[in-house]
Image (tube, rainbow, N blue to C red; front, top):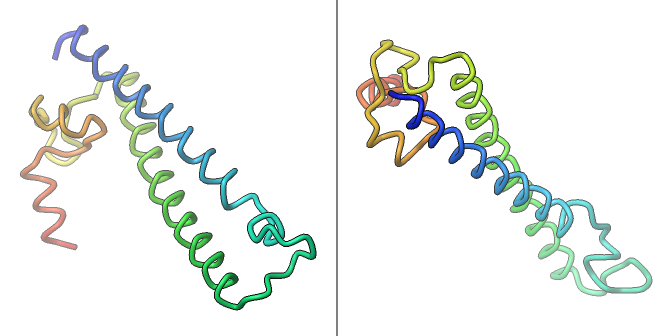
Length: 124
């Protein structure tokens, strides 16, 4: 892979990272950092309906799961950026072979070639 290609993928990773950080911040502001009083709109801080409380709990749980998934993706992107710095970006961490550009186009944070990824999925 030449320097121009590596820079292209590095920029894609940086753009994706920025977007994910923004998504995480938005989710935290919208639901996770708000009190039950804020979410219900009730001045007393207590919801009058148990269904409202259940809905708020579900939304918080769903948001927590989304944040967790996005943080995992963020870790993968940071690891890919580390590989760019180390000069190992585009190299399969399992077999040492090249990850095809087509795979990197679809998933720039890919750590494994498709063959090794399939092998890992079969084992788990």
